[in-house]
Length: 272
Image (cartoon, rainbow, N blue to C red; front, side, top):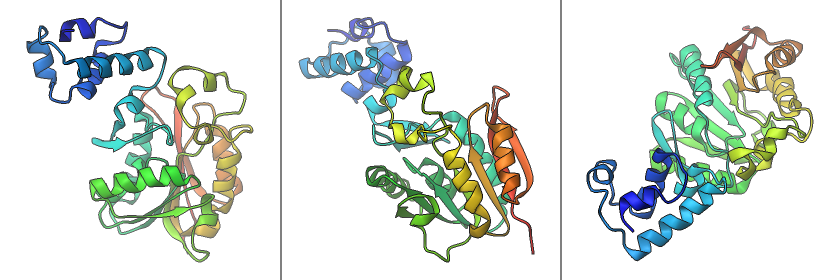
């Protein structure tokens, strides 16, 4: 099988087919694939590519097939144990850096998954002391690996939200991209989402349970003037603003994503 034949083998977007081909034959650069379409793959490379392409054609995410996903300009290792980082979550990074990046800060990422948020913040703001929490030991293993590979200084804790942290720990910034999909949302059974860990997607309730817990306990964990920033669903902005206000947080604001949809809500703790 030649490169050209491999790229036509399954009805996949050309970029995806190239990525899978490079996974099967790492020595093939994009330039080489374009310049030498007549090059023949080895039997091993062909078998590997056929397997990957068949899995993608069945709906398995490319990120899981190649074992990585780019986020904020860096490659993060991912697998079925963690949610695949989304471009929308980069708005959370930008909001955190814009509002708190000019000073040293104690930061916690609740529900870290792959560690993409925590590691990115630690690398973009080296003066920050970042820690991260996740309930899943399998997810934490991936997050630790990403932090170590990228040289990010992050302390990791296993457990549920704030309960995983030292009792007296307080923070200048709390960030989270928690499960916020309703348990009966039809999208849970569609597309790439079918292959992602359900516990990272839905709270098995109305989509606001995790956000309620994070907002309600935030005042006890925030230093005076500290901030809370969360990602949420496009239709949850009003509800999340209400949760923040009910918790006594101030300067509540929702940021829209590139599609103009509510995506990130932030607030601050009153200063002394």
